[in-house]
Image 1 (tube, rainbow, N blue to C red):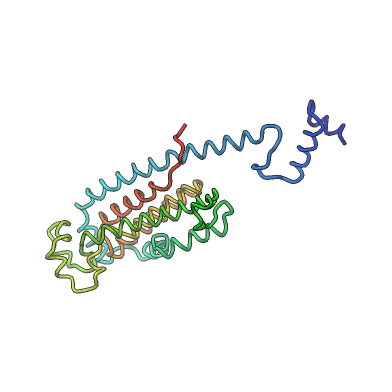
Image 2: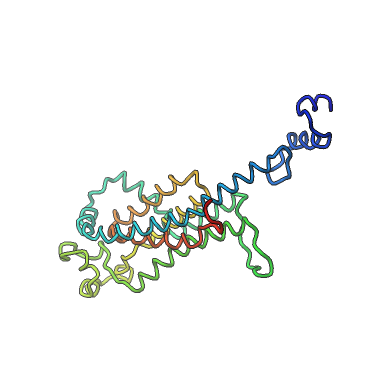
Length: 272
């Protein structure tokens, strides 16, 4: 058998032959010491991942700034778009698809999706409140960052809601305001007779959660990035289609979500 092995792997010691045979038979994970430089391939893949993540937070900040600027520009179309959606012009089938995607922007839905990833993905682990007595494992750090990214984006949006009042499209006669800025005015806010939620239009908390969740999932599962962002955009547009928000609300909410995610979805290394 050793003769056949030498023919397959020439100029190697007997111990190296035996290790290679057992690695091939047992299909040991990449973290196990392996001959023939396999650990170098694993290390290069890890370096590539760290380099990509080092640039990820910067790209999130750029996207957040672009969305904030887009939110300011979209004030010019807030009232026409809100009036069109409130008039029931959104196609029924399109509305049905967007309603299904709302789970991606809801706090409960985001929690379910993160827990599903935790159960199915062995590279994630539930963090334990044992710090600083024991340092968290890499899997625990990974999941903790994803949780913090999604939570922070939603909290930032809620904090702005407490300081800024804006009437939702569903709670105001859109023929009365002469501009989108009038929906922030005290007179418009005072005219609302419904619940406190009817004056919490700015910014969109759903858009913030959707953007932060898409960022967190794309950070850990880069192959599904396009799908995650499609869900985030659909869930955000659903808020406009249902007269819950203006276009500027979802742009600014998504900007806050990405800003909160960028704080935690970064690498400790600089891009190579």
